[in-house]
Image (cartoon, rainbow, N blue to C red; front, top):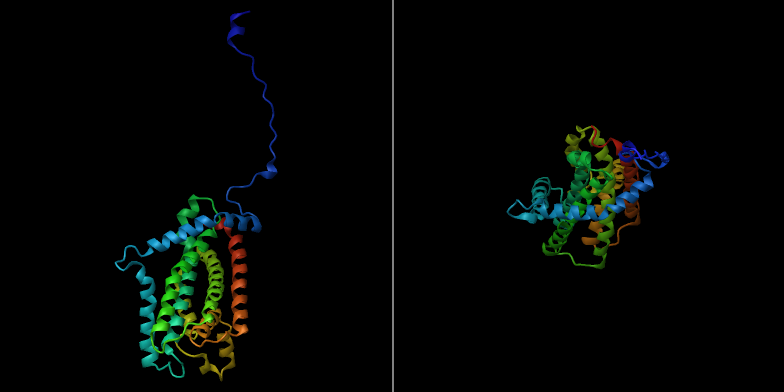
Length: 295
């Protein structure tokens, strides 16, 4: 045996390896819609715990802490009561105007906060979107869940005010109907938030229009006046009755203030808006999945 053969080993034969390219996917590509929903379900625990943590830390720097979740709508309600109830006399013909106003303000603030938070969720978390791979709809869903958790003490305070302030309302079994009404309202908020989140991710200027749109929406929802004043204007009356926010407020007022079962038309309109907005919002947001964080 020669020295060269003892030192240099025989070369190993290279074997070709076949790779099925059909199973490879591009990084950041948009999955199918059903796969997208499955991914969101897999992230459900992260979404919930993140939303809960943000609720607990949201007002930690304030001296009164979480009390501001309740104080803000109370101060808003007091302001509207002074302006519309005492100065403009819109309380005429409204039984228990204080409760009427409190329900409208508290319920409206829930929708306003949820839609605004969901709409800004992608733009305000742009660095997270660019750094991690996850279904982007988790951000607006988390924002809406955070507002829903924040609304729990808000609604409890609303009911307490209605029971304590004269004329004190009695607690009935109809109060249980508040739960499905708020859940339908949450689905509607999420659907609208998903639509606006995609729009704002591309056109940030829309953010500046949101406060004006929500304020106009509030004035069109019969929060501090009764819709009966439009009884001679059928077009305006129809527009108000088709307003989803008016319907959820009207349902809660019927249950809490007037102890009567809400009309089925109100439930049907609210459910149609909620399920329709959610379906359109999910599909519309999913179609833009690959564009988030690139603008």
